Length: 235
Length: 293
View (tube, rainbow over the protein chains, first blue to last red):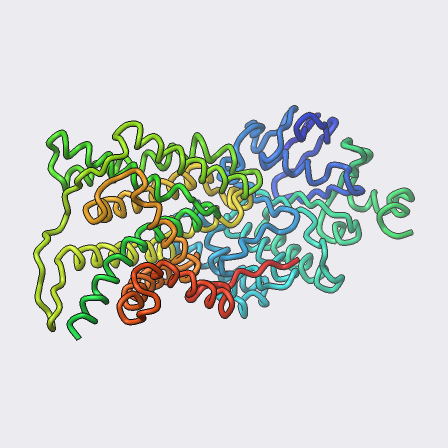
């Protein structure tokens, strides 16, 4: 397994948010995390990237990454695209992409990956010299994913890539991420409120409720369940 | 004509001192997102360290070089052990901490070395060159050259190097930057260290002209902040040009506008600030910072 979480509990100060979450992501696989607001989806990603205090087992390629600093986790090949996108507003689009490649020394491959990002998200091409803060919400989301691509990761953590986007834009973003997945083989953990969108991308998913796994299964299994249909797929 | 040139060159020279401090403020702001009011105090401390070393018999140029290294370490240590505690919180709190730091360092210098004026040898010769009826001191020219070099280096650092890009990224959003593997803590320390080095250079340039006292930089800090607002906090070239503008206009106004004279010349930069803030709030050279809500 590329990523394994077992019985993970996480805390903001004294407040416990995760109460025993488990998750496995195979090499090149894509796993969704669904659930309502406050169920612990974002916190699960944060416990992986090292931005929240957690207990339990968190391993990446067989070695424990629990308690590592975020920059150390990133250096192992995990790229976190945070909720709210985290684009660097005062930097240009190109500079944001270059920051993504901060740890890489292979200049030629970096230049090639910048071209790849611009091919994947053609809108960014026209805005390459603009400050990221001047981009639309959809463009910022594309840039956030682009910055993660630039790190040449093994695993990408995507947090609500559709948040605040018009349905058409969200679909465009997910289609591009789907193409990225097919072409790069990067494994993904996809947090999403919109289960329909998530199911276009992931092979399997887990549903969180109040910090625990409520149920898990393959995309096909979950789509067939009445409770999932009622709660997340709009009837 | 001679008087005019004289006033301009002298203005550029005093402006250069404001510029050195303003560059340090820009550096910390670009690297941490804060305005460091203790920058003047840190510069004075550096000047005292250099002065203390020359008192031990260390040659001036070597004393300044040692001070530059010590200042870098000092700046990094202040970031690591003091500012680090406030960086995740409200930025206003961190700014107030830097004001407290200014008071602390000024008091520390006074306690260690008294509040009396100390003579600080000049790095440049005091000879003058005659040019078009004006006598221009080598020191003025030297000060101007040092500032230009520092400005170019800083601009190149921010816009032309990976380190500069990383420093700016961390200032904008430290957590998001860490997701790309940027060593946030170390970059913040480097930012503060480099700013302290700029402060040390400013201190070494000012001390011979004003003579060394713990409050030596207080006035310069006010002018430096004026230059930062005027030039735009994101632009090293902008703040240097603004600092020169302030130095020159202040000198010219004092002589050519009888109403202002030497007593009111301190008001000149602030009038300039009012005008600039109304017409161009991002500063003359600054980039507009847009936040989407």
